[in-house]
Length: 326
Image (cartoon, rainbow, N blue to C red; front, side, top):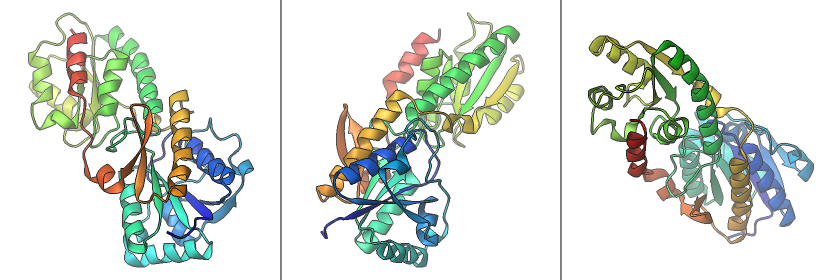
């Protein structure tokens, strides 16, 4: 592999708290290692439109506490075409960038893998997504902050739910994964979580009602993953209205609240460790790997595994939630 002298960084897909901490860590670790760093704005689109700027240590001062991403992010249909990827490669070569660090979720790493294979280009991925749905890592950048946001929101909604003796469906993000819903439910003392991982196995709503989950309570809160598999909070509320009309139901959709805010200490530390590890990986001549963390140790996960394998839900947590919600 050719010697790496300059590293490019980009953030892609949905933003996640802690992305700035990761940008800071990659930039400063690279400079510490004697490498040049170039920031690429607006993700893969910026690679194509040539929105590339050299970064120095002061470019990443005072950003560790900021949510979102200073490099911005954007969707890019052009990058899905061979012509678009060729333009991106030409710009990388023109800026003398020898390797990339891509911070993003499943779609971002899929694009990275295709590009890396197509042009034999070294890329390291960092798992930046609040959904925590990437295989091979115990946690992703942004997940802990989003979980804390959900907990704080549910605490506030509970006051209203209790005052009015209502059943609240609270929709959280997690199109294909129920980590936020399940752990958010445990953290906030909710009665149940409806998640995509088991929606094809059981009718979770019918099971909740039939088990008499409100016998000892005058209000109930259920967290629902936004997945079309679960029907989402609105779909479940409609079902309750039609099938169980005795319940007074309300819906709250947290939406993009979950992506915002200053990252927690856990996310800042995780992003800093992963960002530094990305530079270590490049200097070790690694390529096409995602930086993960397992049992508090940094690991290298091949893109093929991180993207293709589904991250399993911990079923013990489901049992814990059921036992604690009586």
